[in-house]
Length: 115
Image (cartoon, rainbow, N blue to C red; front, side, top):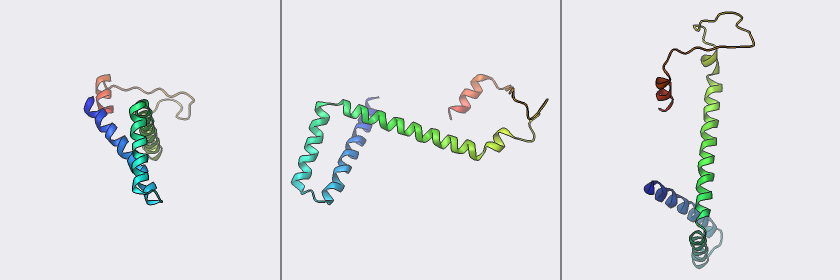
């Protein structure tokens, strides 16, 4: 856990410093850049919650991106997933209710989803 946090902390600081670097190219002198970096470091020391908030926002963005990619994949393969001609159908295929039965044990489903 400590290694993960240290890596995330280093990545966040690198991101903050990378933000300052383009600003230096836009007219900050080396002294001004050093002052900005010092201000950022001091702010992070005084309020470490800034990093927690940044990491939480990063994690939330990654979750949104992952969920979006899953939605796109399901939409792209929806016909194969939901309308396989080899699937047995009883009753009205245009019916309002669909009942799905799976003979796989729950543990097998959980392990296949975690890969």
